[in-house]
Amino acid sequence: NAGVMQNPRHLVRRRGQEARLRCSPMKGHSHVYWYRQLPEEGLKFMVYLQKENIIDESGMPKERFSAEFPKEGPSILRIQQVVRGDSAAYFCASSRGTGSTGELFFGEGSRLTVL
Amino acid sequence: AQSVTQLGSHVSVSEGALVLLRCNYSSSVPPYLFWYVQYPNQGLQLLLKYTSAATLVKGINGFEAEFKKSETSFHLTKPSAHMSDAAEYFCAVIVNAGNMLTFGGGTRLMVKP
Image: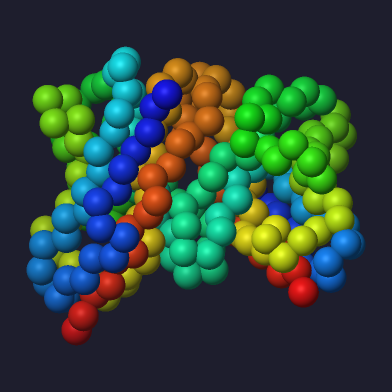
């Protein structure tokens, strides 16, 4: 499967626990984007990363949220001390680079439920 | 800052009827515009994109969209709805190539038999 792979597809956490969401971009893609979709809402941009660099994190909450895209391995979105309001679908997308004119390829999402 | 507005969070049509999903954008420079479709419990799939070539863009599954600068619109149409078209549709904009997409709020399309 050459698509964007996200895991886990579903994650349940209790308030105060940590959530880690992983994203492996498509082969040949070096740009990763994370979006959050709250119930009955559209997708909101969170962060844009290239290998080992955060390019734009203007959509990331100031506290508890962090993202990385290491030289080796998947991109990880980490949410510390989760709260009920963090319950959402988190989508990862990847692109080849700045010449791709915004064509992003999306994974199937990771659905976080906070009890 | 660029943004997109999708008029109508829910649209219902009968099978075989015309589908029209509205999208208006705000941008001070020529944008790149996209329509994505999301089926239940899945990720987003690109339907079509406008990148300043032809103003009428044809996409997959019989959908097309027309870029109208004078109206700042990029409405999505399909002549004849099929039951399998039931999904959520998102309009998105990008101003500078390579930057992140900004999405509209989405329109849920329901198709009645």
